[in-house]
Amino acid sequence: MSMIYPTIETNETYLHQAERVKRQNQMKSFLKGMLFLLPSIILFSVFVFYPMFKTIYLSFFLTNAQGATTVFTGWDNYKALFVDPIFIKSVKNTFLFVFYTVPPTVIISLILAVIANEKLKGIGFFRTVFSSTMGVSVAAASVFWLYLFNPTMGLLNKVLETSGLDAIEWLTDPKWALIAVSATTIWMNIGFTFLILLGGLQSIDSSLYESADIEGSGYFYKLRRITIPMLSPTFFFVITVSIINTFQTFGQIDILTQGGPANGTNLIVYSIYREAFVNYQFGAASAQAVVLFILILLMTALQFKLVERKVHYQ
Image 1 (tube, rainbow, N blue to C red):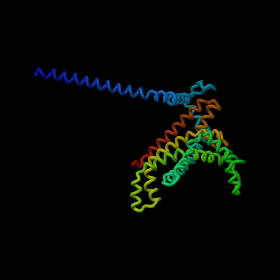
Image 2: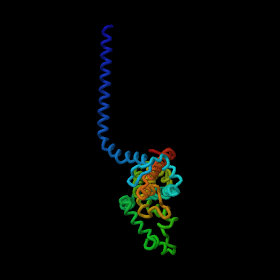
Image 3: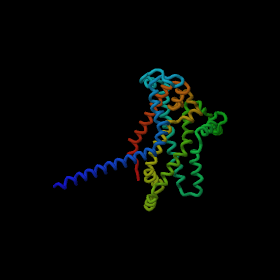
Image 4: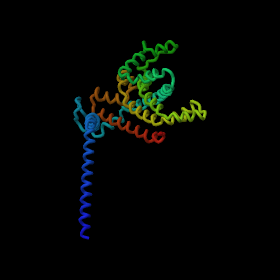
């Protein structure tokens, strides 16, 4: 019996040492991983986390022209937003802009992607043309469309006049301004959306189409029963990203309309810019930014809640 106790003590000592060595190895692995992540953590902290918390902080204060806080207002900045007709109109304009922009962009890009996915001679040239808008900056694209929308010299009105129709004040008529900016945005976003959808099409297993061909299925049947369902993960990604990007639209608004006419194209991001850098009301602008963040968060969560369950993964 006397030999049992040293054996038990030896086993316990060995287990403690093994546990200590395991913890040390885990700590070394953690520190090594953090070392690799450190550059990203620093960049995110400086350019994402600090601005985000600073914005939330400023939203509870009045500020001077230099952005320094002066008076703590609590929730007053937020309360003022929801009785401000200009901000309420900017929210309505933003949702309308999303509706005008996202569905047409996805539909047109899908049509182009289906065409570009066909095995036709010279199709590489058309793929390049369809995706070329990715290489055009927002400023250059906006200036290009600014000339197209020109009421006297613009190509669009020349075509209308040639057809016997009246010219349209594209950027100065409240009925047409938001539609005109939406058309510009659709054109700019088609390249990216087209490439993503084309990649999704090329990742579909060709054996599915071969089986459908053996059964004598037609082109549109395969499109409806195979292509669209198998593209659902790509659609989910494209629609989610497009909605987020559309909520953050600024450049084309600033160049084409500056939020006019009569705030008809004043989107939330442009409203934030005007409040902060024109009126120097950084507290109110920060409150608008927080509201925009919450809206994007809710829209994204809604997407995941309602749409992801219908996504068909291979």
